Image (tube, rainbow, N blue to C red; front, side, top):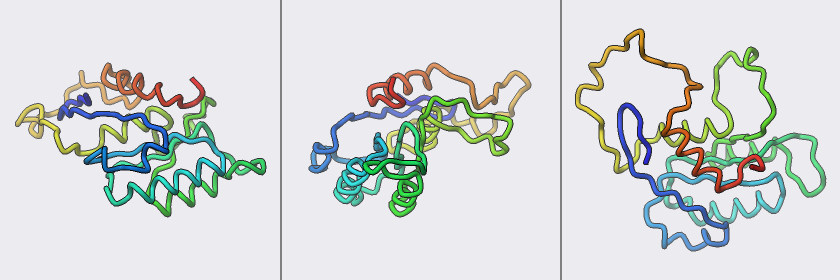
Length: 172
């Protein structure tokens, strides 16, 4: 379940190998797709093949997750530029889940990265089965006690991150 202060949605996550996605008819309606990849040419080529099979389902959330991406690569790897090109061409968002410490003072846009970004993207989607929490949420006025810190780890976020551990992002 995804629970926010505005809605609750029952979301089913399917963790499948790319070969299983070549027959998308067994999955029905797909609202989000997360490709968990490494920086290999093989993985990018397979992603392209799988995307050709599922893009007709028009998922609203499309994430391409890699541990890290760089332009200094070996012969069997693809560069960050190549991955970004694929993502832009296919309307995916690139999410890097490297464990390197990011200097937050240099981040003027306060952007979320890694697993936090995956959770944020899933929560931002308007799920087809969402149920609004209350009718008066629009009239609610924030108070001083409200915590609007984007780094706040709620129980719901932790549940989603725990589910994402199954896809082994960042070598966990």
